[in-house]
Image (cartoon, rainbow, N blue to C red; front, top):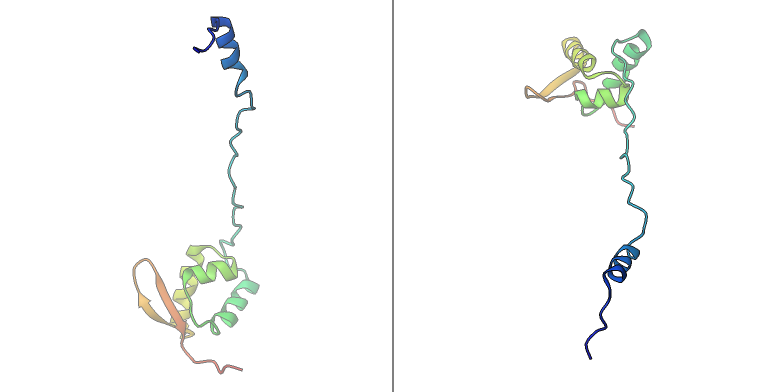
Length: 109
């Protein structure tokens, strides 16, 4: 038995009745908080830098930025000064990633 014929009005009503869900809302995405890193070294930060970096086994720009909350350009200058003082020594001297280590082995407790 063939299906019953529907009028154009019935077909359009059936088509418009289906899928009446609300339209998907796109999320704005996750927004990362902007880091507030120091762009100049104040005396307490400098003292902490000199004291703590001598105990780090691996010293890079990214390690200083992460632990000391200073900017990358300040970290690069600090690494050059610490190397000149003899606190750290350079292990790898790539143009983009400088890797240092402590120059005097610290006795592990």
